[in-house]
Length: 128
Ligand SMILES: Cc1cc2nc3c(=O)[nH]c(=O)nc-3n(C[C@H](O)[C@H](O)[C@H](O)COP(=O)(O)OP(=O)(O)OC[C@H]3O[C@@H](n4cnc5c(N)ncnc54)[C@H](O)[C@@H]3O)c2cc1C
Image (cartoon, rainbow, N blue to C red; front, side, top):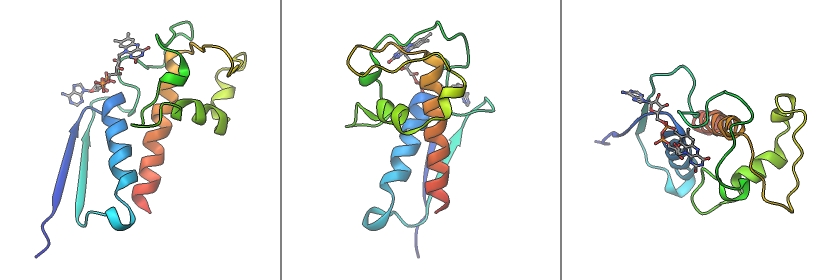
């Protein structure tokens, strides 16, 4: 008999989605846990943003430089890499210039977009 393992995450904000993504990403190949069910409970319709990274004014900035903000353990550059590799944010922030040679204090809502994208990526990986 194979026992079902259930992980339940309460709150689909920044930490909940970071955890969800990292469990799903690791749960492949030889690390795959059979019969794993993950439940995530979130009262808002959108997952990822939570309170701090909601879709609000662009003048609300992160309190740390962008290259120190990441949802991935062991990769502090993940947010910066997402900014470089994804162009979807440019429509919402047309005037934003990314200069990697100086400390970047970016809009909190942009970090929220990154977290939403991480959730969508987690869903794609999970379906595979
Ligand atoms: C205004 C503000 C600005 C911040 N700026 C920064 C920053 O610039 N840099 C930084 O590193 N940190 C910042 N922080 C800290 C930030 O809150 C944390 O980094 C991180 O977002 C906390 O994540 P969390 O998942 O614990 O909470 P949240 O991201 O808030 O997620 C909690 C989630 O739980 C959901 N929830 C609550 N109760 C229930 C329930 N009963 N059932 C189902 N779902 C529920 C909520 O809807 C929410 O989506 C800031 C915090 C605030 C408040």
